[in-house]
Image 1 (spheres, rainbow, N blue to C red):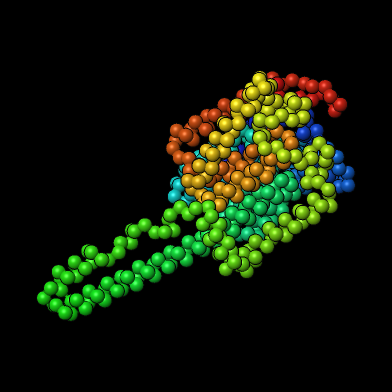
Image 2: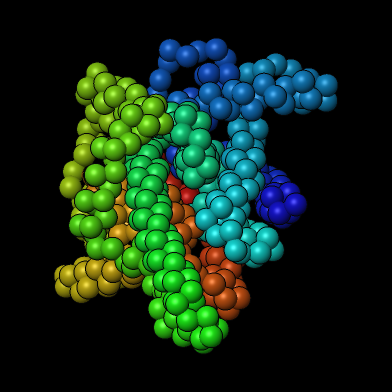
Length: 457
């Protein structure tokens, strides 16, 4: 019932806003000038032509073909388009992300319910709906971009892994990488999460079994001793039994060692030892992820780069502070909010970017603290490394790159309380309303080599 309610609520805003966006912005916006023509080439059966400015794999375009094919009988019946290629209009192509956004919200609900089984169904539903409003995800629901499809594939991969269906998880991993190649990092993170859960859960179970055996042996010894005492002095049997049990029988509520927070090095040591003991089981379970990784490495070696097109402009570079260090793209491309952050905040004074460093560091410590309350230390380290591996090599400062790590953070945070979630919901709604208003009713137009383009502000 919960997943149906989530899907219905998200659909209630996806449909009308999609209609509004398509009516006011019927032409390609920003990177749609690359994605839409490429998808339409595929609809025409031209799979050999490739726009050299497109950096991501063609996964979204193949998914769009399946989407258009599923709608085509209805399109023919209603005479909306005379042919399959004509059916690949920008409106139809954009609608795939609307459907994926609904599916993504259901995946979020399922993951929350799995990670927090004690959470009632109504709250899990509310949390999923609020996360569906996350501005960087919400805005691109109505455009033909790879963001929504990428997040949906990653979350599907993660949910399958949580349910220990590792082969299905790897299949979703292939699809995720085929949409956006940096998702190989999140595939490795998901696989690592599965290995951590499998090995350390096995380790904890062994400790629990050992402690239970010790308790049983102690209890049996006490029972035997009480029996001997009762035989030696039948007249004091009742008094002796009460005294022995009250003083010597261990309490089952005593603090167990598996409930103690192990240090990071202890977790690593336990994980390595358990991995060796379970090596054959782990190899069978996680071998599909290894195959995907090998295939990806082979592709990078063959292609000479991780990106498909515009290799020179998207060369890997060390970029440790995404919102502090300026770059060519940030200064040259004023279509993005980071440009205004740079112009109004960071570049106000030469020292501004350095003054932001403490805030940037404190934010990461806060994230680590939040995750540390509910996750193993080694999981938090894996999350930090995966996030850094996605963000640091990227030369383009873009808030959208934070979407996937943000969702992992929120899914694993233990934030509760109606006030907290209400404030988050109000913030998201306000940002979405402002951004969509500026996009639809206060755009500016910029003449360039591709013609007149519509941009926010």
